[in-house]
Length: 191
Image (cartoon, rainbow, N blue to C red; front, side, top):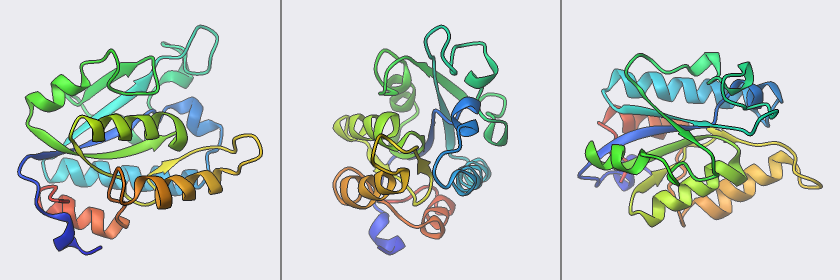
């Protein structure tokens, strides 16, 4: 896919950072250091080019690692929100269910979402599919989402299955990081 194939959007693009919280990162997800680096790089590029960065923060149940107010619930230090950036708190796999995310995005004229975060097969997948159903164009740059081993399936297998077979060409564009950064520099024109 070249950049010309990723450019026809008429609205705005926003970066949606899903559940990159201290407890999840501490558990050591697949390619975690690379994914955090890539997410931080995208955040910096989006800020530099004036694209919205929106954070999603999962509210775990009492006693869970992501229980609100605990250190594990905090958004990871490497990618903390800047003052004024939107943080959406959620209780479900979907960042849209029972939140004001859709209203926020629609109110700002966003029609393209760059979705990144943790966990590939749960909150990232659900948020991607719901965004797709709501009519957003979805972009998921390579190595910007991650997960953990799940039973007998390795995190690597999950990552590759979702990004190469499920997201790509069905629900989202899955460009390389250089392609994604080039599109961000072009005012977020991915489609």
